[in-house]
Length: 99
Image (tube, rainbow, N blue to C red; front, side, top):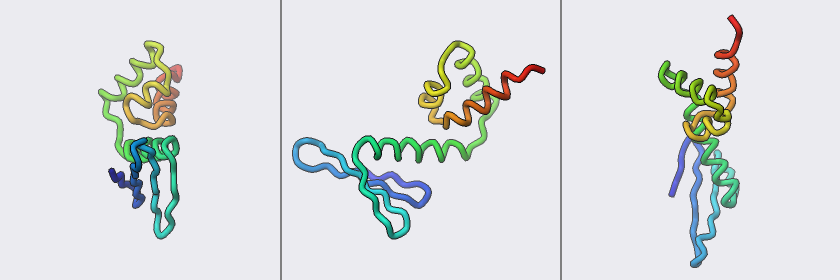
């Protein structure tokens, strides 16, 4: 499986019968080896970077604010929607400013 984004590549390699996972991230000519947890973090961060480049529409903003008002944590909402927690935090801060 290959994951591309931001001119980086991650490759998951399986060997033996154990499904041991290793990943390689290539940036320019440099290759870095990662194991399962670090590779998952890379995949997650890569997805979040792509999500941050899109503007949130009114429906999505309302959905996020509604979930936060119902007691969900920013992290839960962030992971469910694939949006960086910092974006959720900024939206919540703007939504809760007294006017």
